[in-house]
Image (cartoon, rainbow, N blue to C red):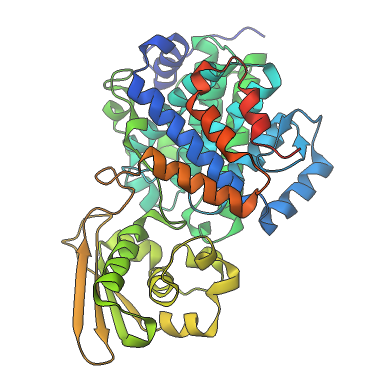
Length: 452
């Protein structure tokens, strides 16, 4: 089936040309390194979720539906077809809410883009440099699209990681299977018909299914384009294209300006806590108060958390399960002052409905302070003795202003592997990621990351 290329000035055509023409030697060293950090973090998140009951149930279902055993599931022994493996690995990377974050858009870039690339690389014996290159390009596409419609897109109710992630997965997969510029443009256009995900589902398993779908559907879009399937020339910006269908106003300069010169992956951040990124300043503030004033739960009569309207819109909520807890101001405060920790355990079902935790959450009140920026928070504690203490965090740990070091990301990966994949030779995985661009067969890393 012969494809005509999209209109030369369309967004998909410009992006198709960019993705197909990009050269690995032109990717700056800092960008390559950030890609490795992102992939290492994503693998760690997948390891931590490998034995989660939700993932167990999902894999039991997909094993009965999957095609040939073509690709590994991280931290597991099962093998699935490449589309199903991309789906499961994307769900796993996102399941603990511990994945990377492009702070300008609140997109979690790696979960949609990395899993289909690992499936393809394993199936086809592709090199680590090829995988990293495709990953950088896919992240660029999804985050630029997010930049062009943020913040209204998310505010309108679209789950931006899923809706934009499918475009990144399609572009990256197209690059990895060697599509030319025209076919890559069609793959991105096909992804426009696969884009879905709503913020109303953030505290449910449906959110994770949306992330799995965008990885799977992005890969499918590239495979369809390889067969000759075509998309409309202006699938993104046309009168009935993706932008207008989602109700957004497009900032075209965010899509194209400086393409290939500035890189969105350099704006990626990594979470020290397994919960919504808007809560990290709250957690930092609570830890600071706990340390400075030796506060324990029994010492505290009330806590007031102040933040940007986005903080309250996303995280001022009633908690009935671990998914709610991961995006709850009240639970984040309770975790620090009751347990002195904010790890996967403190946000798990085993903890969140304990009587003492439920009771403490009732002491926490949230209020808007429009002066505080997104990502900042102030926490004020009134003790049982009537003393008032407070602190304010402008830049949370893990933010671009206070980034996690390579060593901190490695430590995070080790702790997550110990939690969900204790048989993992984590030192070899970490070493392989740092050497991924020298690896002739990226499947070596996949094999290290899977159970045998």
